[in-house]
Length: 117
Image 1 (tube, helix red, strand yellow):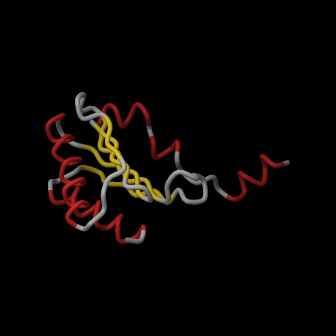
Image 2: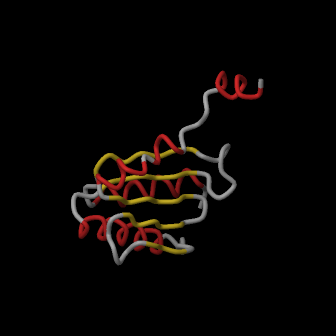
């Protein structure tokens, strides 16, 4: 399954269980680990766990086996590794603290030229 279809599958699974503030970041130019990072929030630890479980179940139904999951025990931040798509389901406070959207935001072309000097 290509990255675009997999991202649609993931966002659909998150939307089905009412994930909050779903963001998809195209990181293929700045990461050699994945092409897309999906970030979403849950309203409670139970909700975060349910969202991640639904992503895994939905992916498996489509023949996509997760490479791994982390964080289920704590429920603050669960990472689901689907290869070309990394899914981060987080509690709002955890999401604010780590600010992945800013960390993984593409560098504007004029900034990257300035840094090269």
